Length: 114
Length: 76
Image (cartoon, rainbow over all chains, first blue to last red; front, side, top):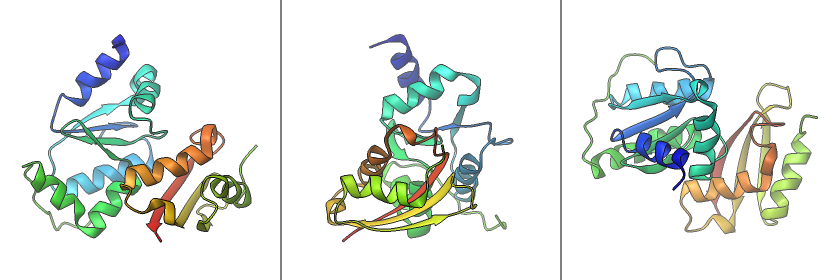
């Protein structure tokens, strides 16, 4: 496995929920990344985030790693879940809750306005 | 050179000839689209697999000539 693949694989394994995004949770640099942060916060999901804007090797490498051409990308217990569209759909149809429960991950729906 | 809605439909149709496709130009800048796609080929596939077929059809444009393509995929 190349160094880059190993580096990415380690990042993906660094937490139960890992988000590759543009910017940081407090300062998302792209609307899609901001949407995903909003969803994760709404469901009170604990996660780690990686700012791909700080490392172009990761920014391109993650796309190849998951064979998915865009950022953000979200991983739950090392499994690629999808990007903004898929996470939004899962939030809308409740599948996100099944995903979290299946993986024994705590969540708490916060009802503050998004 | 930006992609038009017709370009996107044409590319998707190459991979999904049976697809019913609705394209919305979200910002009128030929750079942010929302595509709703219905196809028999999606049957039994996960959302990730369904979206990958569409991204595959768009090819190298994704993230370069085309900044954003929101996807809604439905099994027929």
